[in-house]
Image 1 (cartoon, rainbow, N blue to C red):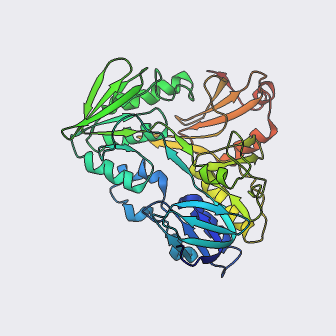
Image 2 (spheres, one colour; image 1 turned 135 degrees about the vertical axis):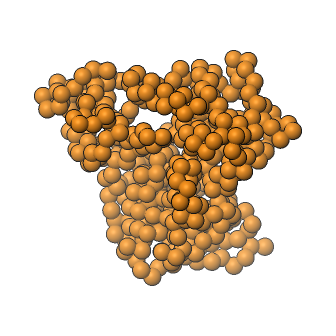
Image 3 (tube, rainbow, N blue to C red; image 1 turned 180 degrees about the horizontal axis):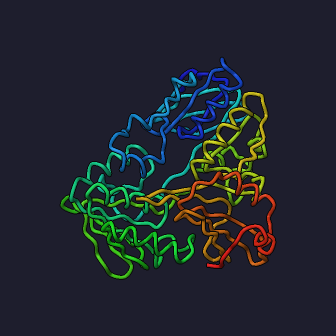
Length: 402
């Protein structure tokens, strides 16, 4: 039998950075309304990017420093390790896997994403990094001089490989492309990026895919498509992530190829339900309808959704950026960044940094990449808004094709 339902003015489903910021957004408008957060995670909301970045390279930065202190700062009630199984919007009622019920006035879906897996048995020696618990498992098997295999040519794979090698761990990095980030960066930057890994001692296995793994005698065997078999003390998978849309589809909310369809205030197709973060298909003010799986988007969309829920409708007019930093390389990007585009570089004066402009087949600007340079991103947002053609931009900025 279900327990008596617990009521909240605002009920947030998902315990990530979008939910944390939604609580902050609510509190900026409503100081007293009750806020409940239901999270499947075992840890209270934390700064997720640190799991593959700062925790590996800053000895003064600890797990405690990642805690966002959501409950303390925003007077929320957290329900951890709790899985929502059903939402009844007409009754404003939520049911969990342990048969508890929650009622709400307004609801936020911020269920995030789940990492892609690889064929093989469940093991503490194999981690598809997403949570703090995953980070702890990697720490456990990646002691000094151990050998860890990393699979993936995206953010997680690249950042974890860099973090591990800087902790005196032997690293093998398996990528399906010829070079690191060759699908995003122009050739000269992709080469420089990869060389930094090689110089640090990372062994790169290019142009092949991982097929499956086995775990035996406290070791992992990884089988590659080209017939190579790698043996290590642990395996980290960075194979991308899939938005968690199951709950949204059960309600059902309107969904398209990008995710849960929201309007400019991040309201869904169902009354009193908002959505934010990885799962949403939102109308980007510059790029048109989009999805975004990056922390800047989670933070900004979460805060806007919270304010809208609290009765102060705000337009989500932010075009989020995505970024990474490894070793001594830092890059940030806006818009559509693909090496299949026509690319032009602006060499920065008195700097080793570069700015790369990406144009479509009609020579309209689609995206911008900042490489080791510190320029306010709003400057490039303003340029992207105008959607200039190459010829127009060349009158203002000295560009060289790359």
